[in-house]
Image (tube, rainbow, N blue to C red; front, top):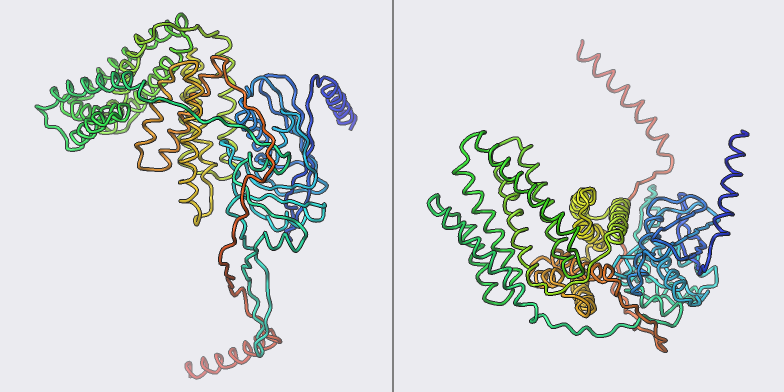
Length: 612
């Protein structure tokens, strides 16, 4: 008992000391809504206090009572998103979130949007309106995502004098279950009714204006009267054509050389189709997309070559050793580049090359540990061609005429931060059941990033982390009800394209963002909206990374806006759904007992007759 008391005393002293160390702190308090734990759904109001100090990118969360990990993930995401939207470097601040509730609440990400608004207000010294409440999860791109239990949260907000209640766009109509009993003759039918609720109309009955919002920017207006100013992007993609054309031209030549070698063995239809696709994109001026098609064709050609030339285990082991030696030589070469000549321009080329080299190493390991020859050859082909793509990508270094060197220690800190962010986002995505396939891809990229970091390849580690962050973020962002999923993807592709263009326009004032431009072009040629989203977001994130590394990220100002940024949404046709839960009959237990006695007596008579 004494040990426990002493420990508590130490913690209190430490907490008091920590509070005393807040220097140049900015603090904002805001109210949020949640659902209480228990059998009967009921809303609750919680208090959130955000304190921001100069720091190095750490997020601290204190909850009372304790809540689940997704609340902590929401706080991390709120801090990152707020800085991202404002054009501020997250690594220049520390963030302290204190969440207090009078009763235990259900864990969930529904306070994420509120925390983001409060973080922006703290960073910009804005006052928060006390009669505005909100629920909604936060996406890393600043959009507000769907949540549950909204009617109960609305009721709690109304009891706490709310005048405006903000909800995620598309959730004006929600469904709640209620139990109903009806008597028909001797029967009592108990059934559940899924009852539709128009939250705008329900809000009116409670004296609250319910408004659907899509973005944090819209929510910020209702809380503060301010919105984030954004200039129209001015980008000129044609000026990058020569660089990307050079990349595609070299990859095409390498493909045609391998094609000549493989012709004697027979070329697959898939390989020829990919080459034709590459030629078509090349003629249209989509050079990076053409490069990708040629690269895929090379993999198919390499599989054919290995299938015909690797005849036994000795051949296979010799090729393992040959590619392993090439990887070691390229590793040594890239280390020299990163240690001596890494600059703002070369950062993206070297980082992209290091990331590709790490994937070559991964595929070689997969080949060595495969259980059959066919799988070994497939992974070996991927390893070889990924290694060859490193050489093609590095050919762009000779186009750089002058560069500003990067401080490697600062780059190391930046890579460490991105590693933490990538890990946190994966945990968060898992905690709220994000899309598993995207989470798995994010985990693979994080593994590559960690290996690169441990090798001292900080450029590649940061680049691979961006890939992981984008995919784990998307695993969260595309969570949506099935009836709005397609529309959500469509709107997100369009908004992501605009965000990518905006970031490119900012980056090209400082540097030639060749890697971002390549991904932007590739996104435009994707048939799958999810693939398009991935590459638009990679484009945006890599452009921002380049700006952060160059310490030239432009801050965004706030503007006072007189009128609401959105028009009220219209309700849609709603229907009730009824499901029978059970049928009760008065005195049914007595009837059952009598029936059992009669049945037993009849069965006994039957046995006596049968046995004679």
